[in-house]
Image (tube, rainbow, N blue to C red):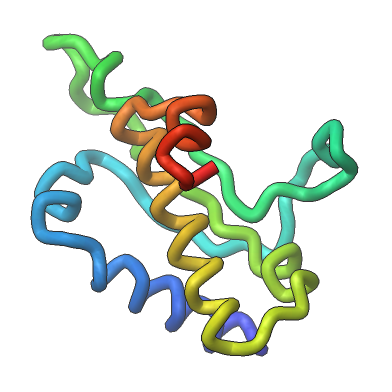
Length: 117
């Protein structure tokens, strides 16, 4: 799957989010990059996505004029899962939802409890 096809799947996943999510996404960008520029996690795996920014609950009244938060979706680690196309689409959507949840202030422990870890 090339970069353009992967980006199309990410865009479709974004479009499929409920209206209330779209309305609450404030000052955030979603970017597809080839792979993370970081070390492996403790289990030896590369992350599928990453949220970088200040979560909504932590923004004060003086939050203005800031650069956008960024959700990175990593293409190569997704492809290396070697999933059938439909399962890959679901995994990309799952990664997107997981990272957007961080934008809403939901941490990894809570996501794990909710089944989105």
